[in-house]
Every structure is written in C-alpha cells, then in structure tokens.
Length: 297
Image (cartoon, rainbow, N blue to C red; front, side, top):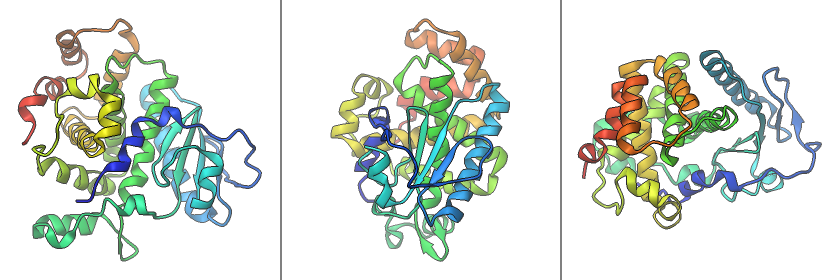
C-alpha cells in the first residue's frame, strides 16, 4: 500500500479557511437543506454528492434532534485554491460552517489504491468489487463517504459537545458515518469498510505510535511527522465504529451525543471509560479499554 502521507491534513482542517470572496463564479445548486455551490460544468455530478449529504444531514438531524448550519462547495481542481487554503485536492474538510469536497478523481485518491497483484486473491476481489467505478479502480467511493465524516464535525462543533479527548472527535464522526451508511446506504458498506479493515489487518509493527495516549499527547507531531501512522489510527477508528454499530445499533449515536453534551467537566481515563460504558454501550467502552491489547502487531 502506498503512503498515507497526505492524510495528516484531515487533522488540521480547522486551520484551513474558505476564501472570503463570493461564489459568483460557481453554479448554485437547487438544494433545500443547505446552500450548495459547485464548479461550472459539474452540476450533474455535484447533484448526487449534494443529495447524499442532504440525506445524511436529514438523517442525523432527526436522530440527534439538532441540525447544524452548513454550506457545501463541490469543487474542481481549478477552483480548489480559490475557495480554500487546504493544500491537498481531494480531501473533504469542514471549516467555518463550510464543507468542501472534490468532484474529480485525483492523485491523492489514486495514491491509496493498493497493489492488487500483491494482495491475497480474496482481498484483491473485495478491493476490486468495492472500489471499481465505471470500469476503473478508484478510491473515490471511499473518499466520497468521508464527506459525511466531515459533516459529523459540524454536528459536534456547533452542538457544543465536550469531546473529552481529541481522538474522540474523530471516533465520533466515524460512528455517525458508519451509522448513516448502515442504516441508509447498506450497499455502500464495502466501500466504507474494506480499505480500513485491510490496513488494520496488516498490523501495526511498522508504526512508532499505537496507543491512544500517544495520539492524544502527540496529535500534531504524529500527524505531521508520521502521517502513515496517523492514517492507521483513522482506520482503527473506522473499524471500531463498525463494531460499535454492529453491537449497539443507531442508538449508540444518540446516547453518545447526549453523554458528550451533558458531561462538561473533563474526566480521567477510567472515569471516562466508565461513563461511556454506563451511558452509551459496552462496545464503545471496550474499544478504548482494550485498545492496546487488541492492537495487532
């Protein structure tokens, strides 16, 4: 598998900013849930992305009883640098109530395509089936779904949740993402799960950091200096979110939302785990409690 180096930028999205200029050079999309704009001549492709995000927003707003404000920009490579300072074309990101996504396949997505001829046949078949679009192998089905992960940040930031840990902000968004896909687009589950599960199954022997304490204490350092290592953490959170949903269903989303909404005081590790076990689901508490012993080297 090629390097995950660019994934670091997903932990720095709060540093990016939408250009203050108007969207007069973009096409306005007809969308009732939120304002949406796209690069000209991409209206048809952008409509499907917009519809999915609108559906995800509606779903989680109904589930959680809260609806964040969001403006969506669906951009071509030519327009990317005009409307965001985010350096990598292709990585969905949320900042200042604006969600920015890419419309075209790109080198960033392509860098994640695993070497099919070097994979076991069963895994190669899974990857090919999950990530073939219009007859071409592409990671676009996976990265398109990550836009819903970024939508999760709009929920917890605008909802004023106390996340307790930096990594909980990412795990929370992955739980929302997996819940939406499982409940509303189960046919997309392979696109969401095959790649992260492949990364986790490959083991963590090559990574310097594997503990949750490491990523909490060295969040920026790991992201900036060990980006592939950071990508492994994200894949663990994706895989963990899947198990949490399988064990507890969509109710875990609601319970986690309420717990993080109500618990304003920061807790120690044991107290936080106990709170999650009591108020959300044992599977979520166990993911944190057993993180080290469950790490495959």
